[in-house]
Amino acid sequence: MEQAGGPALRPEGLDDAWNWATDVVLGVTGPLVPGKGETYKPFDYLVSDIARRSGPDELPDLVWDEALRVVDNSRRSLVAMVARSAGQLDVAKNALVPLVQADDQEALNILGALEVSEKNWEDARRYFARASKLGDSTGTHNLGVLCALKDDLHGAREWYTLAIERGELQSVGALGVVYERLGNRDKAVELWKRGTEAGDPGSAFHYAEWLRAKWQSDESIEALKVAADGEIPFATLSYAGVLLRKKDHETANTYVAKAYSEAVKQGTLGDPLGSLMAGVTAYSFGNVDLGRKWWERARNNGCEIDWALFEAPVDFPGLRHLAVSWETLDKVGEEQVRLLMQTLWAGDCLDCGYPLGGGVPALYVDDMHTHADAKIFHFGLCRFPHWNDSALISIAKDVGISWKSASAPVAIGKDASHVIPALFVNPSLEEAQFVMNDDQTWQATSQYGPHSVLSSALDLRPLWSGFPSKNVDSSALAFVGEEEVAVAALHQVWSAPATREFLTLVGQSGGVLLVLSSALGPEDAYTMEALADVLQSWDAMVRWVPLRREIANNAT
Image (cartoon, rainbow, N blue to C red):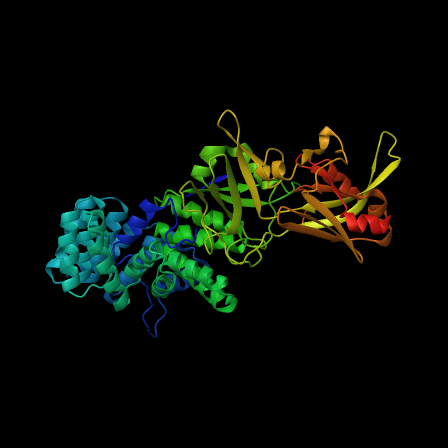
């Protein structure tokens, strides 16, 4: 397991990280473009290196020394930013000294941001104050950030208000957050709406969340697009998920690529939240090694990630990887998470309906008190890992649970001389359950597995307790058609192709043995050996299902 930080307009459990993002110091993660010139210099190499390999931290000291020796004032800020991304803070500061001495406003903000990254608050305040005194809106905004970080909300309000007067659009959303924290939600919403209409991504992000909470879906999506078109990877990735649900996968792919590009840029420049989202997107792509690297960078830059990544052994059934929230892990424990992974398979996302593929899915759990429904989704695009114990249960529309099935005769009896027909079904690839034990602990099980709610409703019994009697109720009925056998139960119909010989056996037996187990994988070849393994699986549950009476009479 690797330690790490509903529809995610703001991922649950990341409030502290999002507050940091809202109060972000301007001048740290803005887009930087190398200046044009005819002479190739070391700092040009630094920029091309960061674009090509995102590894300026691998450059030797002599390159940095040469960069400081030959750099001119027009590119000092650029060298400082690349040095900061490489962890060379002394180089970054030294590069800025001549500019700061000349009261260059951009340099003052960058140097103040460097001091913030080292938690040198007073030094940072001094540089931002010098920039603000020169009339710089960015420095004024950053003074508001420092106040907000220290919970001086009244001070933050004053600085953000002045920054807005000086034309700093990004201060609008931040001022809205301040009013929200002061208890004036109406004023906050007013500011977020105003900022959204002016094109501020931060305001739009908050406004979209507020609209979603008010069940104003269309307006929320419009605001989310404004945020997605800005430089907020959270919003961009979430908007891609919205597009997937609208079946516009081509545009969704464009926004996924944009989210990753923005996150990588921000993460490379030292923004921990950018590194976090670069990792999330890499995991969604299925690149686990790259995801780990980005999350490690996020942690090294002070981001406490609210999720854990689990990896199963190669030869284990079920999911290979799963992202869960720390709250889920605290409630159920590592052993139960690993057991749950054996009951889930990468079918289709239960939000957008597109295949999960080789990506790391996110586990979203709806707590029903006596049991909890555990479902998997595209990580970041559609859901973030979460344990939802609120009264509001998220429902994925127009997306059905995937299931797999096969039909085969099963030999029973001490000498295996008696053969009966069986319908093998994995009723849910993407959903399982946690059930509450008598000692108030959670136990993982498959959707129809031992102790599950649905196994009781369907009168299933564990296979290890023996084959069930044929004297059962008719809450489930079997049907046969041309080259097909089916069972209808609990508003669900499972079917599988069947040979003529198998259908004859169904008629002679008067029904089928229904075997429900999560061990039936989507890519498995349904050989007799594989089905024998299904019968031996820990969660195999069975019951006898009688053939519908008129069909049985016709067969007789």
